[in-house]
Image 1 (cartoon, rainbow, N blue to C red):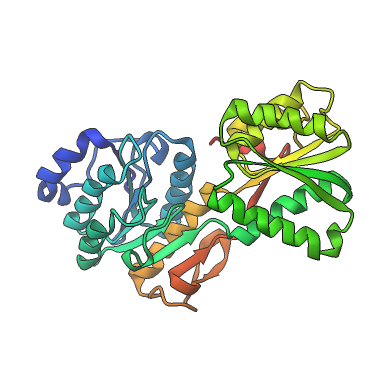
Image 2: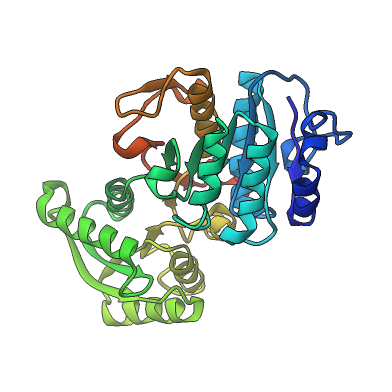
Length: 349
């Protein structure tokens, strides 16, 4: 199996020397693993290129590690390429190169839902199967989208976590991003409905929703205000990575540490110290390693003809089990992943 990374500095060379590289792309002298840009053993007729939003991003390094693991199990040639900065224009040259080199499949986290479609269409016309993950394109542009979690699943997980942490009763508040954030508002609406309709949450009262505008200091200040305005507050849900980290920082140095629960959506690297010092019991996101692993098996299934991307198709995804294609070519990884003291040390993003 070939593992290789390419960045923006190589894009022009790749475009002008495509056919020269096409015949020898698997003969690089690089050594090591996907995480350091080297190559592993193995090989085969299946060749997969992974194109994240940008390189040097710990989140995408983790998804690439998962993709590399899957490629090893499948026996596929695998490479990661990408720009240094996350922009759609920076991704186009890599998509063009994949098409010109006749790769079997492209796994892409799109920097724009529409701007990449022309380049993707060219790749698909060259028989490249295109699987998006993490961030989708227009559904007409690709074969499959590997979705990390549904809005319903994200909302349900956050309520489940806060309920567990406050013993199923008490006052809670929400620290959101901006008041017009579409995804945040969708999750909040679903949480409000669930609190009203689910008897399991009959003793939990949502007393306030505030907005930190995804600004660290404002989110910090809003946390302080919540505690001052609601002295009986038992828990805070912050469905934004900026907000949960700022709230944890405030709680960690306050008399409310250990008394007011905090959960929401965060990343292991920003939340590790607060889990380890007892400020936060658990929080959620999704496992980007599993996301990359699933995307690679989906790409292989498309190339092998096991699936076409039609609704109802199913395929095997190794350690993750069997998955089914839903409407609009969407494959759902599953419910958000819970991070706590037992597993947070296993992740680096």
